[in-house]
Amino acid sequence: MPFLTTDPWMLLVTAVLAYLLGSIPFGIVVTRTMGLGDLRQIGSGNIGATNVLRTGNKRAAAATLVLDAAKGGVAVLIARAVFGEDAAQLSGLAAFLGHIFPVWLNFRGGKGVATFLGILLALAWPVGVAACGTWLVAALVSRTSSVAALTAAAASSLWLYVFDQGPMLLLTMILTILVYLRHRGNLARIKAGTEPKIGKLSS
Image (cartoon, rainbow, N blue to C red; front, side):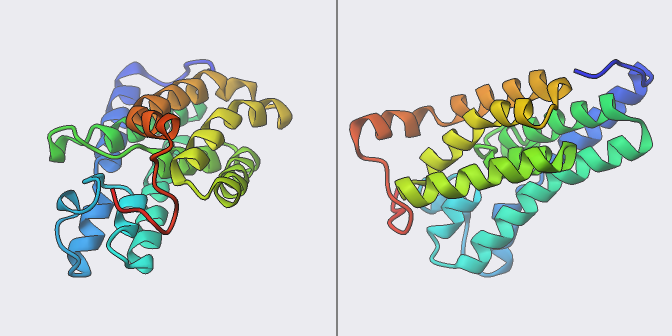
């Protein structure tokens, strides 16, 4: 973690605002705006881009992916510009927590992969690009969204070492653990061989 140089009260305010930004359920907003119904009643009920894809609308899924990533990235960039690196990392964590535990949805949110990648891109873009590339390669090989997500999260700490971004290690490890915890059901299905493939996301 970077040294804490920002006033604690300002850090608290920044974290609250980042959490509220992260809490915006763009998957639900996008699907309702496009007349695709209530996302919580579709497929797995998850609010992320993978479940949006189950509506059959690739544009809606892409929009959700970009917006979920952007809210993490925007929270980091604004906090960095106004206060500094300590606020940027705290805002990234707060936005991520907002996505997976949104106050507007009784703290039942998404799994955080897109937001995680957006945070990495904003904090250190080479690490973010490498993590996105890892997701893409894993998705092409496994044809499974959850496997790609878990592989990218696990590899993110390695990319920190490659690109000499040690101060991000604690935050990245926390986010990775949270991603894995949110994918507990997916891990069980992967082990059982029942996890849906990309393009056949029916549950």
